[in-house]
Image (tube, rainbow, N blue to C red; front, side, top):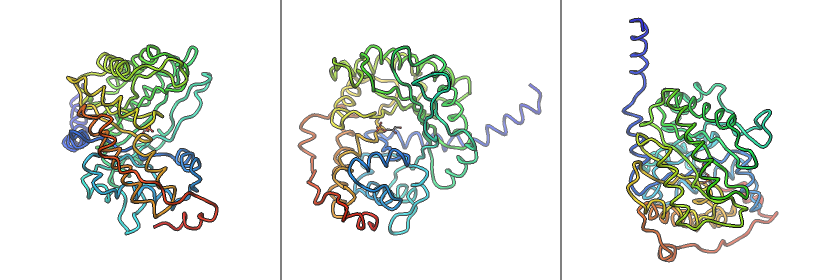
Length: 376
Ligand code: 13P
């Protein structure tokens, strides 16, 4: 390597603020805390709102996210929140930018930077993730807006002869490029190759696909010179397919998940955070508890749940201001239960002991649409 090249490499290394990356990783992996995924895209939040007859207006999305982030005591159990592009630019009703609202509570703001999935040409039933165009510039902007970490989600479906090697490789390469660009921008990447639970496959098949996927992802991360110490892996638990007649026990899920992760994830990776992927909230907590209770993992284990943290809160809120406090209590409760699970201390009693759910006072009707769009 010429001396000019060495000098330019040093300049590049100096530009990457490794101290900032290290402190973000440490904050996200604070013992007993996890990440709230509140980064639903327009389509996804609309699906969740539609199911409860809540109109997906900009104001309702803002009010809902504000409600979540203003939950008293959220920072006892939540270390970071993943935001969506719309939310990172929005302000709370009292005029505070959402990332500042979180940072003021010691919660690290993060951002989903992928632009969702599209069909993978020539490979029916498989998907790749878009969002590379202009990513370097978007990352710089997100950092200015207060984000300290990023997330990119790839999805792999299990079916007859899928996932194909081509699909796994394509997604692994994209994830690695995203991670490299994030670190360059001083943002900690959360690399998320999600193996979907949809289908009638066995636990063993999910383990095989997850192992193959993670193996390929870590190969690509190394090829792209991503610093493993400055990233987090977000993965699903190893589960039986949601339509499989034979559902693995909590203990079997924990055993398969731990075995698979130990085989595939280098010890240099500081943390693995689980997505909930459509499991019901209490089941996700039970399984997380069993995985963590096994102990002696080389990485910190935590959660980065979307639905398993939010479902009860959303069903309680229903778009009605008067339900906000009860919805916040539901979120706080789930966050606390999952925090207990990280310590292997969750039990059925934890649900009873800390449960503060109350019935929503109203349900959505057409006549409430005016109120829904006027919530502040
Ligand atoms: P779920 O926990 O609802 O799967 O969402 C997590 C997430 O961030 C998916 O990208």
